[in-house]
Image (cartoon, rainbow, N blue to C red; front, side, top):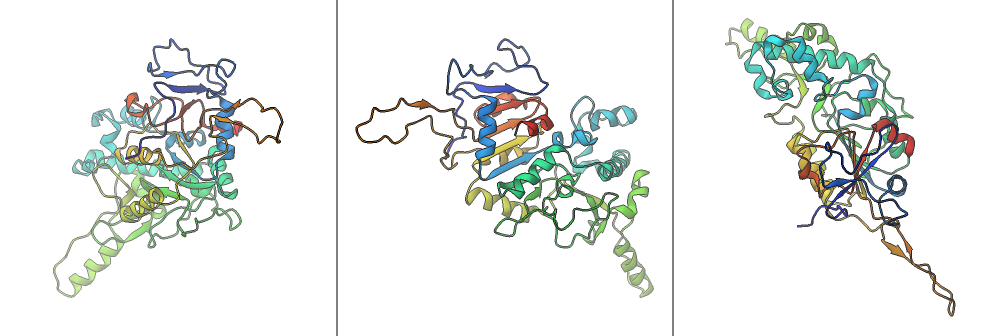
Length: 383
């Protein structure tokens, strides 16, 4: 089996940029194997911000795995930070005794009427915030890559739908009804491309906020008409089930029950409603022509399925690139003096872009070529 593509050896270089101060080699908050690289004066092959920017600019097939960190600038909270969604709900509902974010995203939450009510209220709030939010600079950067034909795929952990609002094509169930939001949808000219196989550019790993579905009859509905009720912590009875039940009762048949509409968000311990399709796309991406650059951005990499996807995408198999060779020589006219070899920067095929490094940190030591430490939106200004 091929190994992860990191060329960092025993250390992983960290490059701070923008408003974030550089990391000291003696910092106690950074794992020992993560070190600032030497200056290019000391080692011309060392990683630098310019080196990473060049890698992004020269890449032809860029895969992106993104999390909540790309949306926080739009006003949508993340889930795990001290000011994130979980801590906010923990303060708001002390009687629920929430111990971790998983309490609100585990399939077992429906066993408790109290946690289920908090979940429905949270989903309604997130949907309302998402409808008011605008795509961030990073979302627009993804659309630019797509317009330039350089975007291989976006695998998003986000359920806010801002990638689609920025103009990327997004995977939906064929039976999903169109969603009407308070923000206008992208125009035809703004809608992004499908890949040559007809697959959308953006694959939602954790579902979406725009729809509700009935676990009893599998009917799917737009979430908008039910937001007011969800905001009170109460789910709606399925309209399809109600009609069917009424028909059965009027015919003298026994009731088969009425389902409660559930947000189409993938929870821990349950299957993705489009799992077969998403799995087919990821397998195709991993077995076909691979990306030549991987950017993992704005995610703490806690979800097992996403962690596995990142490891698979980061494995060897990248095509040779003009910027990847360690040294190069230009062709020389016959009889002329050979020119000295010009050192080239170390190759960059996998970038972790986030203010904080994921934990446990040693899990990722040999996965990434470089950690770009800073604000996600400020990174866009570099490229």
